[in-house]
Image (cartoon, protein in one colour):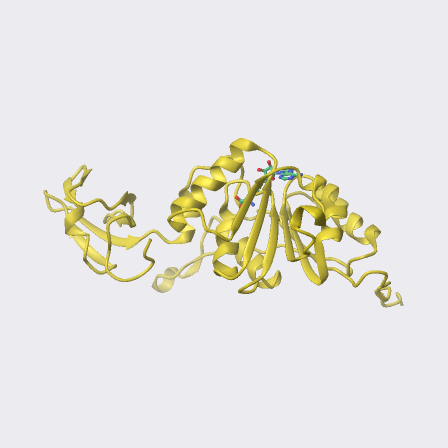
Length: 279
Ligand SMILES: C[S@@+](CC[C@H](N)C(=O)[O-])C[C@H]1O[C@@H](n2cnc3c(N)ncnc32)[C@H](O)[C@@H]1O
């Protein structure tokens, strides 16, 4: 799979027509894609630069770009809800996912976050993804392999329940980062405490306020993490057209909350957070 340069056979290409409708095709020499404005020969696209315009048999114009990871994530088949790109971006930066990191995530779901994590850790990193449901694991495997052009060697996708996992399952080597996206992450806190290296970052993604309260309390009770932080990210698109410049009317107002904490060294008691006395 190429991510830049002229189009090659096997590339997933997004064609956009004048009405901003998208069509995604996988380039194969000799193939034709049929639109309501006639066929487009794949050979007319192969070898051309991205951002080119291809013309169908009856004169329809289509702008051609490779499918970006966000396009793939938002259009791929899914068994479980995916982490949206605005939240994956927060996880990568606030979770301090670095090249070469050993990261554990659960559940793998549809594989959306797995893809971003794999990109960020690079070929020298390692991603271990647990998924309890076989059907979801199959979605993750297919979606990730399709986008990355095969199953990456540094991705260990495992069928299993994270609550049952301990250091022994990781060859006794702790991980640098743990990211959870599941219904009941508080059930996994013993596992996280056991497998996360001192100083390691733990993040979890929860959709509702009761989940948020429960996981925050659970983290505090464990007494082996820093005081957890919680936040959400809101992204509002803008229409920018002369005097009509304004925020878009519609937005995704809620996806989920992000929770963040770091593993303390064993046996350490963190200083109690001081709250300002009320006047
Ligand atoms: C919302 S989905 C994850 C989506 C994924 N982060 C993505 O971006 O595509 C939650 C997944 O967690 C899995 N799950 C729930 N509890 C689990 C556990 N204890 N161990 C492993 N996987 C679990 C569910 O089967 C489900 O597929």
